[in-house]
Image (cartoon, rainbow, N blue to C red; front, side, top):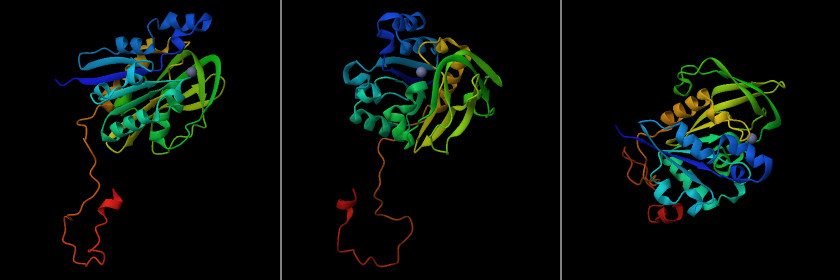
Length: 260
Ligand code: ZN
């Protein structure tokens, strides 16, 4: 069986913060959320690496990125530090087939905004309120084995309006105790790549210890894993599959160079 190569990328800043804030997060994620996710998601069909922003080449040198089938992304306070050149490379790899799973505050990461083409803003509130998730696409592979509804007892509120493109397939909807609603799990396709946004995962609550949340992320990895990565996209097609009878008035001019 060919294993799926998963890379969990985390900006890994909050977990190293000082004071009571850092202590609270380290209580749930002593080695960082990326390592907790890697441990909790471990399975026979997955090879999982955990990387972070402060590592060489921001955690994703080509040797890692180009051998990743599915990339998980958690970021919050350091989105701006991610280099645009890295975002370019990730975008191309997603378009070539790599799966991308964007978690929680990754909604305004450079890579998610790039892939969506919108600002991806939402309403939020840190009141530690109850969140109830509902499966709205029960036949979708990402919802496999998930009950119709489940609760995260304390979470940050993420609410509508969420300005993502309307072509996303909604897999989960959330209701919050304070009255807000949110599309908390949405699946997209971009060229050869599959993308899933999943909002659970605020750093001060043990959300990545919840078995339902982990099951959703595990399902999403297997859904997003590509059958193959397309090495490069060829755009010129000088030879047509059918014969072109119309005479090209510009045939003496080679326009290929200016179109590439
Ligand atoms: Zn948060």
